[in-house]
Image (tube, rainbow, N blue to C red; front, side, top):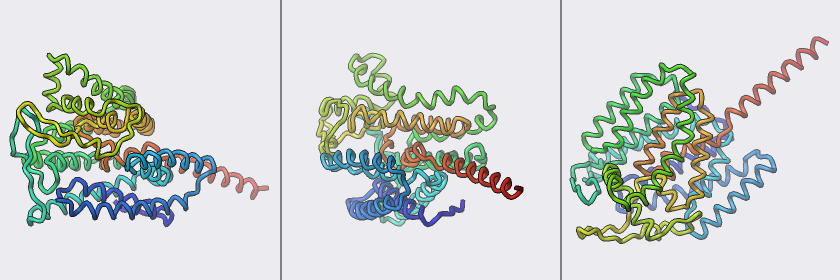
Length: 396
């Protein structure tokens, strides 16, 4: 995978890599020592992104649009201290004419190098191998290894996303040997981390790719629609579960199957409420301090459901942004069953985890708003027209 870059693209790719690495560090176990380093990396990336914006060749309309959206996100940042959306907007505008394949290749390489580095540091004793439990009231079983990461779920999900990135790069050209390799790694990692959701996702995705490569194009329509409606359906179901769970019965059984995720979300909802746009700091959002009936004290509730996290942390209107992302990604890949199925797998992964505002989902956001392919087609058409005109002029 050789990546050829133009000079004007270098600034964007460099800023993207630094942002990605700084967010990846957040998944590594540390006692605060790495936080300062990640903060400095993010500051460097902010400077690079702003510098890159100066070199953008945008139309006046696009410039005004970018400034308007950026001002809104900066106002939100001033109120909450959360710069994520401002940086995301700048990354989106900077990546509009970048080749999305390069973004996935870079992301894949960062994760591979990151995993190797963390595992080596864990083996030599620099990073601890923390044992974690199922994190439910009913079941406490400390046999899940984090292997240098802050939680035992991190590494299995990273293996899943490596396979996802590979499929997004290769599409129908994905090699069966590579898919089998990813599935085998997922199974081996599960022996140590015991992350059933990540294992099910990895194995299911691998089996789907084997089947999808043999499907004919007319079978893509149902898959295309499923991709568009997957996020809305899972969001509505997740939101409804917080209220249906209060009725008990079968809803308690469903919640238990998902390790009590919706019950925990109810605690969070009762404290902060539901808003169209939620303007609050990360510190206030994380400060729960609840006590279970068994005396277990929890300072902060981890919402392992990306859609509920967006609703409760940022507000219902922000969730519409992800509806648009699902639609745009489906439209861009309606001729690729492998990618459509992979997108659905990623959306399902966020039903049992929370990566929608994390580095692993970042390439998908940029892909949704990327128009490199469109610009390339227009450029090729212009070149063909000019070539025809030149030939006619030469003949005359």
